[in-house]
Image: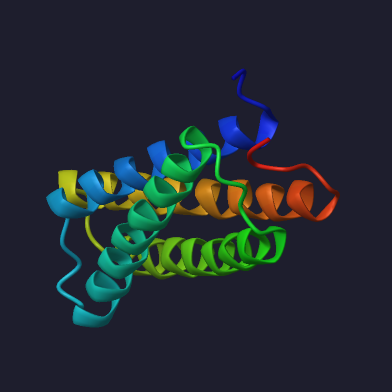
Length: 130
């Protein structure tokens, strides 16, 4: 059971989402909306990606439409969360919290791009599990 390209992309998405959640737990924006949106985005996609990984290891094929849907929603949510956090943390004075917040925002933006790549490759016809 050699992993294909999309399996590796799913693992990268999961790893970045976990990094974002860890960084989120160590930073606080003092803005309820941004904190809540970030926590829900990271937590929900950790759960979704763990489910997709379990489906891959149990050799259960994922429906292409559902995978594309999750990838598009993940792309939009991670990009939005990254933009919200960048806008919030660039206004703060120099501190460790600002640095961690900017790093969290950049990881969110990178994961949004990875989700977009995942949606594109899935649309082009690759299967997540064989």
